Image 1 (tube, rainbow, N blue to C red):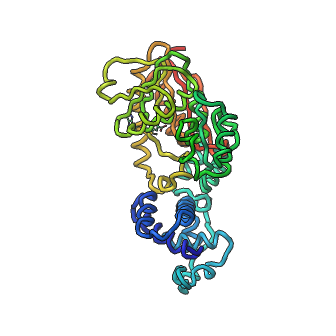
Image 2 (image 1 turned 180 degrees about the horizontal axis):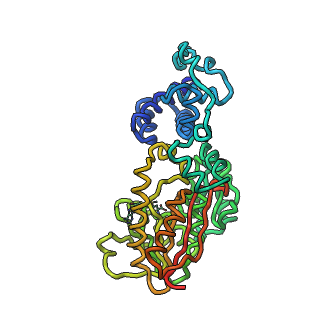
Image 3 (image 1 turned 135 degrees about the vertical axis):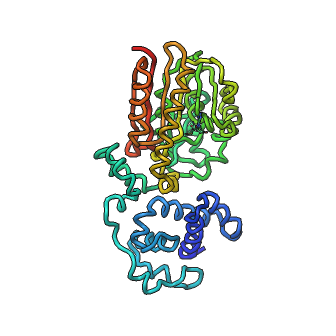
Length: 389
Ligand SMILES: C[S@@+](CC[C@H](N)C(=O)[O-])C[C@H]1O[C@@H](n2cnc3c(N)ncnc32)[C@H](O)[C@@H]1O
């Protein structure tokens, strides 16, 4: 496909997404209907589409409309080129610009528009992050690096780096975690590499690894991942501690991949349903990796940024408080309750911890940390709480 044909295809896919189809599904549907497109075309299209979604607001301003075509006109203009050079109707290029389109479009005006943030959310972001708000929002407009977690149960980080290198995946150590590698080259080879298939490395964000490193747990203790989902935190903690691992999720179907991932990692994990956990079972450490706005990972899921609304956020914050109260009941004497989100919004993070401490005055905060994309990973929050002084 020519560069212009790719832009024409991106317009169709974006229109599908803007009408409500999840981005991954829209990309898959398009590929199914266009078998002639090779892997390079599909990869380029994916980049165009995600890039346009991350910068949807500023590109819509530049392109003159919040449609697939408007976003891609804005995308061409943002790259410094004249839209007419691509939108000319030649071959498989998009239709030529109309007079209205030629005159439409303006430089993003407000900071929220320039930084691709919904207006209603912008005050929350600035209140949460202060001076860090602008660099954070700016990084969320860019593509996320690919990070790997080395399974330290199986290999050292230098060993994993050397093996990956032999398999055509070039990486370098990342400063946020002793298990983290940044992928420099060959990201598309990871899933077929022996390093990945043998469980020596997993795909995991660097800040997600950094919060897992801070989980207080020693060999032999009992650990509960209360919101386990695919088990990313269990697997990361299990890479460094020989403990007894239990994974739970309100929706057990979310844990369907965990047994296979745990087997690949060589980590014994017991998966339990809410009914099985309902008794009085307690643990030394309970991790709540709570459902959240996902604001810290909007580079990877840009649709989430535009789908969030004030009522949805309020609902999520209320749910987080309920989950924390439920999970606290499973913390044993002198145990720890670790709260995490992949968000940078205060109401989901320190606000949530303050609310918990107000409802449970016998608990104290041991440690907390906010990671931001400027630290070199996704936005993540971590808080370690314990009962008593
Ligand atoms: C952020 S995701 C977890 C991601 C996972 N820990 C990982 O690292 O891959 C949040 C999870 O919380 C689960 N969840 C939602 N409400 C819950 C509840 N009341 N109790 C337990 N889990 C819940 C969701 O099903 C979802 O899988």
